[in-house]
Amino acid sequence: MSGDWCQTEGRMTRHVSNNTHTFDLRMNGGNWMSTINNVVGWRLLTHVDLGVRSDTGKVNRSPQTTVIPLMR
Image (cartoon, rainbow, N blue to C red):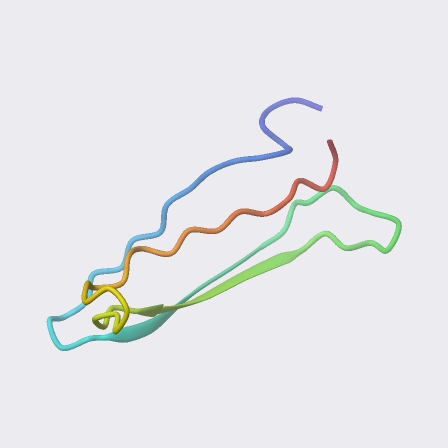
């Protein structure tokens, strides 16, 4: 095996209008190593809310996520 097959990092950008406060980001993919259960695909879904937080009084920050590598 070659390359960065265990862990990578990426960025997703979406341009929104001034009156857009919420939206979803979706991404599907494959190319995971085949496991005992033949799970090779993956899906990412995040709901973005650009509204002002009631606890901090500030606009929500960009979402961040990580996935534990299949193999270590």
